[in-house]
Image (cartoon, rainbow, N blue to C red):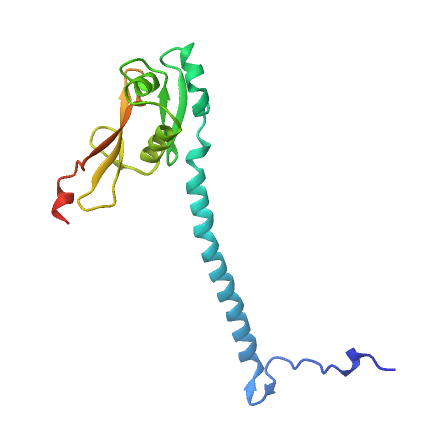
Length: 180
């Protein structure tokens, strides 16, 4: 009794001629196809991983959660850091502050909730410098309209959040309107 393995013809060696084509060309094509497939696959995965990191990076902010800021500031020093907002490897701190700067100022003058926290985070993480020592987010219209502004620099530190608030007016950069 013979097995199926006995009936399989051995593979020809490199350089053998099959149907008028030299086998090394087929091996070369197979290697190129495998390499191309690997490169395309890795290129497709890199933006996905990068986007996931960019989305999650600000969420990894050190400090207390937004919900407990009120508790931390009701018994703490004005200089107490309650939140860190990242911009690349550096960060801006939000301190408890007082009625003129920091969390207490934002909470009393502009309102504090998770939406405000996210807007501050977005402006610092990916906003444009606004000429006021902070970062702003803008509409995608032409001319651009400034939607949200942060101002950095307090009596407690140069890299501290002074204030943050909603804005609805044309962007600071006057040349933006000229390009429309």
